Image (tube, rainbow, N blue to C red; front, side, top):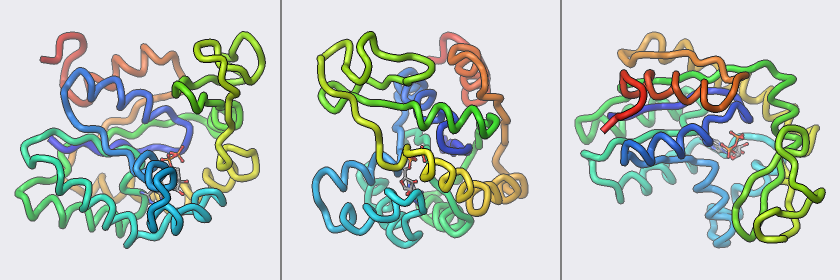
Length: 221
Ligand code: ADP
């Protein structure tokens, strides 16, 4: 099974994906995470991607497709895969179809997460993470006890460069211009599409997400 998660930055795709792949023993493929890992490791791709990411722009399609192909080559074709933050353009989507077709697969299901822009701006511009233990906070919705200090590790919390307010606005515009056309692309595709309202409690979203991907809630084994 191949699932594509669509939706604007800050809508919570990643949070939901990490939890469900754990239950399903599927693989989570987040191009944002792969790019941030490449930056940390100082690879050529990481260096090339840095400027685009910090400006809130998309990394060029050819770099992204090479990254995804290389990553998929290390995953058995029988493994369920959940793509998060990829594809982000129609060229990436047609590129993904070609890669999957080569191993007799296709995108089976698309889940579209939706929330109003003002919610997304608040979630992203308030996001803080701990570089030591990976804990994530939100200055508006789930602040640490002491401002900018991790409750768990005592580390100083960081704000992602692309979560600065102006860059957040740019990312939302880029989503509308370049990624939202994928909704029509996948409606014309043989994959099933489910829309999920993501301006709700994490648990309520998760229940709908489980049904969209597995057809049932609770025990999905
Ligand atoms: P978000 O969904 O919150 O924007 P991501 O972690 O998915 O965060 O992506 C962060 C940045 O990484 C994007 O703004 C973009 O620069 C780059 N990026 C991630 N995935 C892709 C992709 N599929 N195509 C192009 N750029 C990407």
